[in-house]
Length: 229
Length: 237
Length: 40
Image 1 (tube, rainbow over the protein chains, first blue to last red):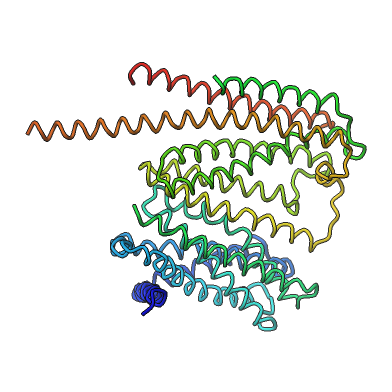
Image 2: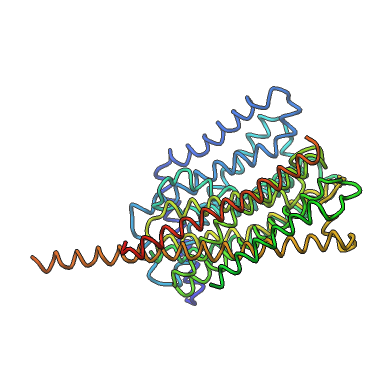
């Protein structure tokens, strides 16, 4: 096996290990989902009951809910690690550090994807927006957003492992960096739901792609240094 | 002492430029006296971004060379960067209220990006404060600083896009003063103010770096002392 | 506030803040150097 293929299979192995752990602790994965639902409900209370106002705000509310739930989701993926210590042993080989990051990020991506799809549906129902009509561009946006949140979240979850006041520091570090992703995803969602009247959907999706690529590269390049502790 | 001379030169330069900006330079035709705020505002913003760049570069230096002096530079630049970022935002708000009618406008890429810069810096400094081990602190800070620096251009472009697609012409754009076609006296004053502030910045960086170095030395000495007392305890047994 | 008020508020905080920060750094530096020279 070439080095790259070995790395990839290692990454997938890590992702699978995390996924299995998630599935066994099924209630934990589901609780993140319910957290997102609760956030949506609170948005309804805070901004409702005017249906039009909620419908206008829906793209923003969707992505705020996903970003906040995302903080919790990546947090737990790294919590699994501190008990184990297996991560530190793997990290002895430089080639595997990138793979470790990739594996964790893939796991995070899968979680975010599932969350994204479910929350998208919930937003459609709760805030009266026609998700089905623009399903393809909306799903593309969700995928791109999930990549970005997973990439950034995995990185900062790694940074804050064993950090004091971790529960506050993880969102405090992660959320400002996600601001452009939030902006792009909301704008893309908004454009998609409106049928893209100004033709700006493509531009916003490009922004998301650029953000994702840059963050994945930056995360993969620097994550390894964390494991040298 | 070269640094002391730098400090005095900086002090004189800043004082002179402030006097010029307030009393010598004419007021803008459209924005009136409020336009004078642009000079320290732009200068502060420039130094905020410069500091951030230094922090990121110093972080790379630490990761590459493992010399703790790089980390001391990073800390100094980050702390001073927060200070100038706060000034830039304050100046932006003081300028915005008379000129825009509001202290804040989301679509102004500079203001929004600078606010995010503040959030990133504060997170960076808090992360440092919460990590006790000096080497782990330096490593964590370095990679956070690098990723944050990478994020900043993305933020800027995305907000510009945001504004562009809305096509609201902002009356009284800050660009007036930054436009090369602007009257020479404005441009000259701006350059002068930026230069004076940069001298002050350089002086502060050096002093704050020296302070950080003293802390590093003291930590090292304490560490050695602990090791020595552990050794003597073992020998005594 | 008249325009002058905004200008004073802006310059006051920025220049004043610079001075305050510079003073605080120099004071901390002098104190630490004292500690070091007195043998910690």
